[in-house]
Length: 206
Image: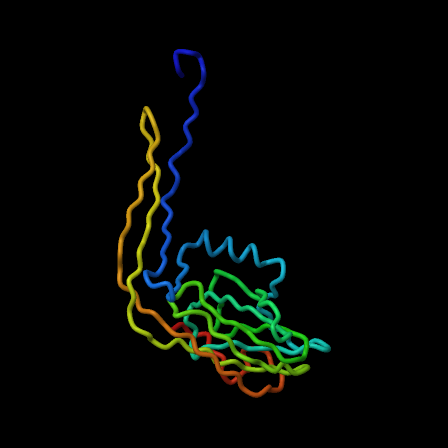
């Protein structure tokens, strides 16, 4: 309490935040949960969930984006149908999938998809052309190939309080991290089956 009678309110110190960005502009990584979560929330209005119905829906095709093993990846996928159209986010979730397959539904037709991972340092998103067929599943094999190491700057923001004032400090730490190049190859459409019956299904961790 000040002598003037005004009450002094002190907010508890905020938890430190960590933001990581690649030193090289072409390398990207989003490790910070708040930033990734906000990006996903902003895209949630037009996104579709990872699904696994027992039977296909009418007038609907499916795309399986899969890796060889379950690597605990956090996916962001965009899609465009018309040539020259704008890419729109169709899946964005920071929580890793329980298995190695991300299955998305789409009306039959030809689409260009863009694949990126929020919890990996990569050389950038990768696009792939996919033909979606009614009541079938088109597999897209996704790979991560080592592309060398890069320096990552880590910025830690923290607040500290004292009896007289509050201060803010920033620490910058540099570490080496492996960068990966995303690869995507679309296969021929297959007869629909639930994920666990697909020949490329894998639930075991990497």
